[in-house]
Length: 241
Image (cartoon, rainbow, N blue to C red; front, top):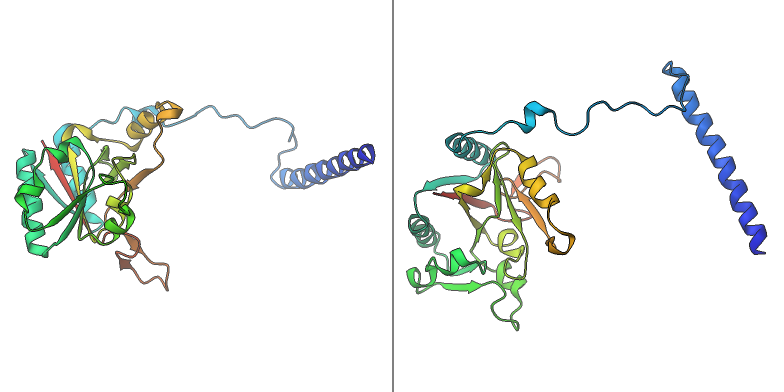
């Protein structure tokens, strides 16, 4: 029985290949391409040299990033120090009447002192308590604060990599997102970030790599643009340095 099944499968595969060759051959003939056995040549692969060599100055990257981020509805600000960025977050928290803030468990944020600056605000640190349901905490937060891993000036995009200390929910679920961008992490092109990710060892790859360009938006229903459906409707990019 097994031999008969194998013979039948082989016959079906031959018939399928004949039909495929006939179908592709018909398309090739209409296009004037008789020789379909030869693979098409690909003399150029990857990004062209002029693109890979594109590298703006730091000031150009900052200016282009802020312009592109704001063009899609985001808010951008530039600060010399983390202390200035902290004061900006504190001021916005007071302005919004924020009662619940969630932040990533990152060294930069641990040293920032938001808890001392906002003593009456409930500030939670991602994954600091194994008994807590952190997705629910993020969903109920007024503001989520994170330091990004990369930022891309050409597209006005930030990149955040998830880890046990950096939950994706912190940037995806709160009403407002505050993304702090150390200026040295600002790149010109998307390819620069992809090269870094591609160069990571398999065991070091994060569970999630998120590219965020402005606030959440959707036009799924009758092409009616709605902000904040799938994530924060208000997003701030704070460039520091």
